[in-house]
Image (cartoon, rainbow, N blue to C red; front, side, top):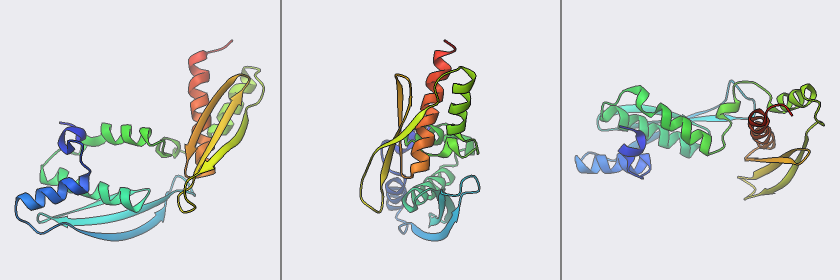
Amino acid sequence: MSKADILKGKMPITMLQEMCFKVKSTLPIYQFLGEECSPHSVNVKLFSYMVTALGKQATGVGRSKQEAKHESAWQLIRLALELPAGEEDEMVATAAEERGSLAALEIGTDRVNQVRDICIQRNFPLPEIVQVRSYGPSHAPVFEFECRIREIVRRGAHSTKKGAKQIACQEMIKTLQSVGCE
């Protein structure tokens, strides 16, 4: 049974509250544990929350307080339903990819340099990486960058400029790998 099947379109916090209500238990109590910088990337903060409900405790880590809270709720749901740890791995990876997060980029490889290396190997012109636009409120901006090689253009959006560049370059790498050598 996957995470999506269990949550049935609801957010983990909502599902946990409903579970507590059904068994006439007190509502979940969330405690902020703190924030730290990701060991893989200097510009990425990780937040931690602990939730107590149904006589159990669980912690969650995320790139925002909200994400950490939802992750802690999901971990408690998983404990309460006695699901094995591997059940949600596929869903978490898919969700992270859909959000355009830096999760896949935190391995430590610089996608900008990778694109440049591919261009040099294939005698392509060097990529042009430019900021196309930025939007959103000042406390949560979204930057959009485009990576252009000849007529091929790929875009990436993220909450940091570096992240947007990396995502745009990652998309370009995927395209160049699928095209092959000319």
